[in-house]
Length: 433
Image 1 (cartoon, rainbow, N blue to C red):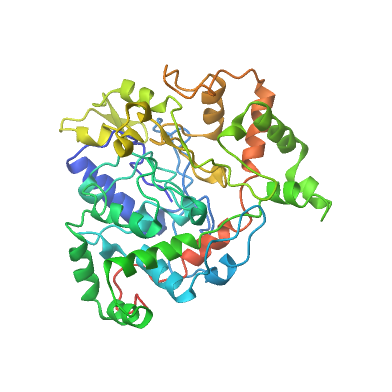
Image 2 (cartoon, rainbow, N blue to C red):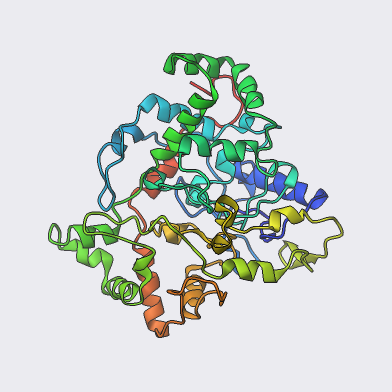
């Protein structure tokens, strides 16, 4: 799947060009550009394009379209009750009916103000439940987001949500994108509920599942339950680290290079923020740190000199820029404390090889560049975390570190994609069944 205009990164602007971006994006995500896809599309992670060579008119897309409603449904609620290797047990059991309802809502464009956006259009299953092709999402009427779309894997274990940690509950979190003007743009919670109440299928199923029917709380519960079910562990690292004696193949699957990378990961102190224990490994401390990316973003400025709109084609914007979307103080916006400026939540490293681009603003495109960023000492903000310093590791050691990060990819990521694509998308009459 290729978003033809996806080279527009964290410099979105209003006008016809942004609306074109949104149109192409919608068509691609809905699978309507399938005739232009290259190769056989399957339900798997990796249908995004890596954009190598996109600055050349000779660029050839390697993208593939998404197949709609032909996936394989999983018993996500049941599976969530069985701890996956490398992960803790979820706090409470999930109801399969709620998971099914939440899944349907997650893909329903009618949750947005003008029925053109769903949750899944910023958290694309085939792209690691984030967006590989956009640094920051494009929302209602082409309005730009200011932060990278976080991946949704293993949200059940997160104590804080969003890059700035402004929410601690998935049930409450879902309302932020629904009401944000530059995301799904609903004017109020009441407007969302009124629209869904007018859909008989939703009215029926909410009445069946909840004594109170469709409310702000039950809508939040349904969407949160599906997201909570996206549990993804049992990577080759987990089998090597947590069950080293169970199967000799665990050593071969992980590999010597990845083992060397894991040793470097610890020696260089990466594990002080991306933490793990002897029982499980979330690879995040859940805290907020300044890596220097906030300063770099500010230094890049606001008005782009050029924006790439197609392979080898650049334009200079002649429209006003939504400058408010570029003002980002990080955790300070939540706490009000100046020392929290440009601090952002530590993301988990699980499935990190699938969830590019990286950092809170999507400013780093590859794992190789992320490693290089830290080897060079981060963003060189005088106020950045003191643990971020230049690293004395060779090019080969950097490759080993990347092999370790790749070994954190879970065994069920493709199955979660197929499960996501087992439903009907959009506004069909029986969509909630």
